[in-house]
Image (cartoon, rainbow, N blue to C red; front, side, top):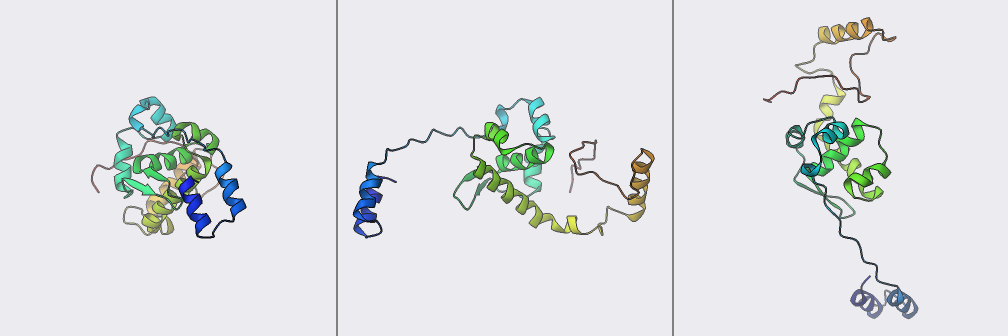
Length: 178
């Protein structure tokens, strides 16, 4: 806390005289300048390895998810829209820990955790209807049955598996038109 704020708190009786002396005697801690996340500074092979998307598809995905250009969290941390999307993609593509992510994003563990929670909530609130119902025009019961049989033929012990959420990458269609 700076000297001016400390003195104002003393005069408003929010701090006692002893607390004010203690606050004024604390050394001023300089925060290091944070270098912002820059997707363009990351090698294409690293982008693929870390996020399982190409550099060109990440801005398209940001737009498709309706992620704003800037996101301000409850604790006043400010994130770029691409950065917060990359945090989501990175966490879902590989079982990484926040300790590892700190090195990539140069953010604290609490900031990364709050950012991940925000982006998961954002995506879930916008696309809940796609996650809670199989009544979708592009998803037909006959197709699901076909998918289940194909997975079963490859040796899966379960009969009703038709999709994978474990980060297994399989080539898939990336439509150019909504």
